[in-house]
Length: 339
Ligand code: NAD
Ligand code: UDP
Image (tube, rainbow, N blue to C red; front, side, top):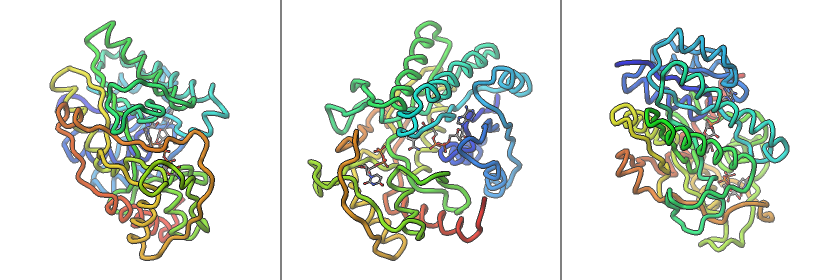
């Protein structure tokens, strides 16, 4: 296959699963990561699963010289850019740090790509760009109106990519707006590994299931949803990884960019998640209703037609698959007492 694929932030949760999907499809892949939110041992586990050594370069996407060295040493056909900070709460406390890492990192990476004449990039965007959408399921044409610095950094990144594609049609960008990634690889060797107490529902539920946290706090039971709790479109990380493969293949074969939602199109409530996880781990997980979390959207759900027509993308895995694989991951991790 002509040219390698660079995964910036490829040691993280979604990047590591995408690494496996790309290698399985025959791509030669390089991981570039500063490990601000991942552990270098991920590469050993990826080698164990794939049965082949992993090429990983430690570095920061804001480091032009490191990127120039990387592009000089390898013939890189395309980049998948995962490297970003992703905590909404931290972004409110440190908006400048989020702009520096997420927007600054993208601009520095694009400049290095430009110097190396590498013009294909898949970008990790998020459903959070929609803010509180007027329409659910939400189409890609919905207005972007994110409500926090993290979400606004994703809008700014999308705008930078749009500017560049308008200025020079030689660039091709795959902008993927993920809904709520969940689950883990069936090996139990890689998965979501939050360094602090998780803010997101699924990793929090996993910590309760494993006994590290006493009970789940359900933020609000008075939303205009079937059971009153918040509804999200949870997508299995392996389905999401396959979405990146299809996006890359589309960019490389057509030279045309796309902006697509990656979700299932199906909404699940907080209580649906707790029930599915309870079934997966074989115990009723304790929960308590609390006040709504400030800034939360009642319902998020993807319109999925465009991903299907442009990329041929459809999800295959269920909420039960997400909970079972997450449970397998957290129990294997506890067993092995990994760093
Ligand atoms: P993650 O934190 O597990 O992975 C991100 C990786 O990027 C980490 O390995 C981190 O060490 C690395 N990184 C961060 N800043 C870097 C820098 N300056 N230089 C080099 N490496 C750097 O997060 P994830 O869940 O895998 O998310 C991947 C991408 O998807 C992010 O851009 C995130 O904003 C986006 N996203 C995630 C979700 C989600 O719920 N997980 C939802 C929508 C969008
Ligand atoms: N949620 C919850 N308890 C938690 C974390 C989240 O009840 O400890 C709810 C949250 O209010 C939302 C849903 O679970 O309705 C998904 O939240 P998450 O933070 O995982 O995703 P996001 O809100 O960013 O889509």
